[in-house]
Image 1: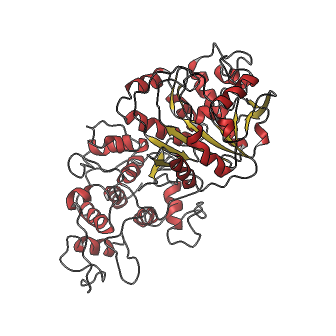
Image 2: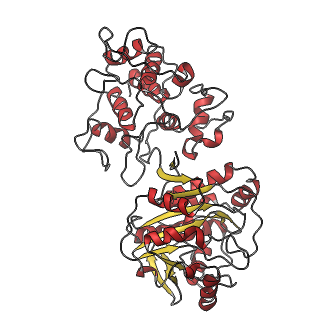
Image 3: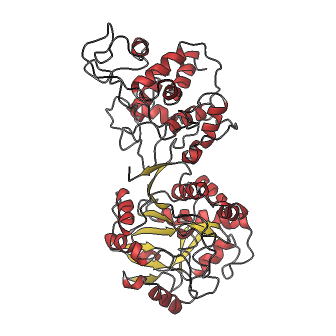
Length: 517
């Protein structure tokens, strides 16, 4: 059983970016010379944080940053937080080293990162990245405590900036507010992406740990090892060729070999496909060939010759080479970990390419609820045969009709995972979602409903689940999204994301990074 001190400290640590903001506002320590008695040289007597800093030092909760300095105005990084948590737990022995590419073996926080990750308190962003130097945000801190508490369910009034709270933190913030752990930073705002200084951290730790602990949280009996903050999703509101190139470059991805750029060519005469002038620069950047597969429902793109004509008419052949991947039939990819499919049928030329850049226009969809990255790599990369298999959860290779909705959504997730697994377990495929012209209808509809939502921006990620979840969150939060929400929820569209996460395609938890900040 954890000691009362550990439990209290865990509670206080998780509060460090919340209560202190309301208590101290935007106050920052002044630069001074001289040393407070028995304390750090940069912590003078008589400040609002002096007593707390000295108390934390005496009790081994927080240490200095070198040369007898505390750096009271500095932010608390994820590495620092892990170290504080670890010391509070008594620095328990860990088995081996932390398996993160940005946590050196000799780092002072290596054991702390290993311990925090193994216990599900602080995870990584995906791709073995811990984010050691990243400042910890208020929503991340609340989420750490919520997970430690066993992921309890609670309801609370919304903050004024509720839509800015990441999806992974919504339940945690509700629980924290309902239990008076957070009250906001003024004007009913939570400031989920805000960070805290080390001085504010010290004050919260001192205030909390010198009081009687109101209750002892019960940790989850099997703390989830999943990443606490999910995958990184990059964002820009600049929907332009320059914005497309900037968001791609933010991924710092280096494709290998022959590169395919997967997109939807769009059904004539008036669908909202991504325009060639928007994507040309990023296609040139990767020296890519634009690829597509024929449709299984009829229309102008069901036959190869007609589909090539549509690609030409819509301007894609003017900016790059273009290929219909299934003009010569199908090839199969194994599906691992699925419950619906054992094989995924993609275009026969799929394996001719070594790396894939997936460009998706995010929108609603009459059958799937919404279309984004996962639909693009499942239905989109599926041959005509493969589309039938996905739509019917493996029951038909010749007709896309007659399948049940749950089987369809789960089959999309499983087909998407087969593609990702084939491409080096996701190493050779990345995703860009463009949130413009957001109709409730797909680009496979030649006469879609008019968009109800204003253009939002462009997202990029190495995780198809995270980028689709972020797209959903941004679109649902937008004014006029009621029709889209009805379309998605009416088709149980979010189950695609749920199943995709369950089978390991990606994470619904994510950290949104605005590249314009």
